[in-house]
Structure formats: structure tokens, C-alpha cells
Length: 467
Image (cartoon, rainbow, N blue to C red; front, side):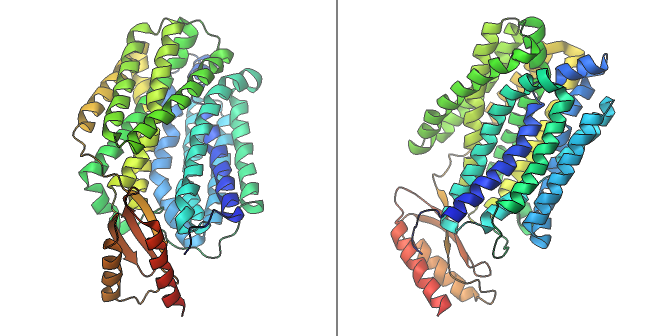
């Protein structure tokens, strides 16, 4: 196996799947900065907890169904499951757009979340890319999510001025249908579908993943981060409108420059964390930034200048954490259990969004804006204390090599021999050979591993398997 450049077909698959994912996330995120104000104006004296529930409702159904959707893709194929999920998402968007009550919008949002296609998209990306380029494809999809978030926060308030929140829901439905067209017209068809332990959850591994204290710290971290984010956006639109005096259509002009600067600041911090191997220090620094920003908003949400400065701190820290948390999962998860660990991680993320909406709405109704930001500051502080106990991460990267054709009849002796050969190579810390997939899952130290020797060994094994 040679370390060739990514092919045009692999690039097309990664970019088109990233676009499909972006269309879905764009619709979900555009509601975030505007829905609380819309609901208060549209439905009058509605209980704030219902506003928060509507904002976070998608997270509950997404959390419950995303792993089952991934398992369905193993049985029925990725494309049919993704298309089905996008249809459900579009249906939920229409339900929310046409609802005349908060209950109707909440149901629509839960239906939106029921189109949980994340695991199926990742599985299809794995089917369409070679092992040595899969990480790059996943990075493209991950980057699309981050860009969708930034664009959505800026566009949401502006589009609300022109088409209203119901119009955003309609637009979201149209984007989902456009995603289906992209799926069948642009995304290549895989030659075959296989279970990939680096991207998909394996049920028999759940117990081990759920009992790993380091992975649980990271799952708790992503739960806290998205709980804080969603709760903050229950209160933040009211702070900008009612205290800082910014009209709703102009909220996007506050978010856009803040997010652009935050993205620029994120890059050197992530480089320091990864390249200079100061990950835990940068990680704790970012959590402290979240806590400080939320604590500042408790006292200074009356000032536009203070809000902008504190939002800049918040999103700098948020972007760093969004980049580092998946990296920590990859470092702590066993080589062949990364997909299962990521499934639990994503479930925790969406549960955090749901809880943040509900708690944020409840607190806004009972304690006002300061109470919401105070809760977020306290949660970040508790997270920081818990994260301090995290073990220093091993600076290892996930890597896969193909062994040629899959061989379900591979013997335990052969597997042990190949794993021993891999572990004998410099820089290889873990090696799990899975003959039925024809793949070896590795954890390697990128500073000392000899990728050339790995490639030559894999090519030798592939030649033997195909002879």
C-alpha cells in the first residue's frame, strides 16, 4: 500500500457528504440566536421553560436515535438511511414552520432531531475512502460543522428579518431535500458496505467504553459544553435586545466578527496543544475561559462592549474545546473502539443541548438573565475541577492499514503474529488486527513512527492475501 494522495473520487465523496451534513446543521443552528425572541413575541406570556425546550428538543431525539440509525445503515445501506433521515428532518421542519403553538414547534423540533444521520454519514464516508485517507475525510466533515455554526449564527438574525422564523424552518426543509438530491446525484456509490470500528459503534464494546474513566470525563465535557451553549442562547438574545439595545436583525453583525476572530485565535492554540504537546494545559485554559466569560455576563450583560468582549472570550474557548475534545477521544479510546467511543460522545453532546435548553428556559423564567449565565459559569467551574483529574493524554494518532482482502477464517495465531510484528515497529503503541475486516487498527506516535515500514509491511501482507 502506497501513501498516495487522496483521489478525486475520495475528495468528491468527502466534500459532498460534508455539504449534506452542513445543510442539516445549518438549519438547526440558524434557529439558535433568534428563537427565544420569536417565541416570546409570537406566543406572548409563554412559559420560558417551553422556549428552552423548543430550542433543545432536537437534542433528545438525536441522542436517542443516532446510534440506532448507524446500526440500521449496516443492515439497509448508508444511502437509504441517510435519505430517510433527511426526509424525517424535512418533515419536522415543515411541522415547526406551520405550527401555531409552542407544543407544535416542540414536536416539530423533536421530529427534526429524529432524522439522526450523523453515524450513517460517517459510515458512508468510511466506505468511500481508503484507510490512509479516512482521517482527512472525517476532518472535512468536522470542519463543515464548525463553519455551519459560524454562518448560521450570523445568518439567522438577518434571515429572520426577511422571512421570519417560520421561513427559516421552511428553508431548512428545502435544504434537507437538496441534500437528498446531492446524496444520489453527487455522492459516489460504495462498492460494498463494511462495519468500520473507527467510525461506527459496535454494541459489544459499549460496556468497556462506558466504564473508562478518561472517556467518561470527555463525554461529561462535551455534555457540559453544549449544555452551556444552549442555555446561554436562551438568555443572550434578550440581553442583546433588551439591555444592549441591539435590534434583532442586527444580532448577526455582533456574532459574525466575534466568530471570525475566534476561529483565527483557535488555530494557534490548537497547534500549541497538539504540536507542542500541551493539550491538557490548553484544555483547562479553555474551560476556564468559558467559566470567566459566563461569570462576566452575569454582571455586565447591560453593556454591548462587555457582551462583545465576553462573547469573543467564550467563542475562542468554545472553538478550542470543540477541536480538542474529539482529539482526546481519539487519544484515549482503544485503537479498535474509537467509533464506539465517538458514538457515546455524540450522544452526550446532544443530551447536553437538550438539558441546556430546558434548564436555561426554567432559570430564565425564575431567576432572569443573570441566573442563566450564573448557572453556566458554575457548570463550567465544576467541569474545570473534574477535568483537572484527567490523566495526561498519550500523544498518539489513529492509523489504519489494509491487510488485503477480508478473511473471516483468520486464525488467532495469525492475528497474534501480525499484531506482534506491528508492535515491534518503532512508534507503534497499539495494534489490533481484525481479519474479517481486512484491517489493522493502530495507535502510533507520529514523531517516531516509520510510515514507510508500515506501508511496506501492509503491502507484503496484502500481496500474500491476494496470491
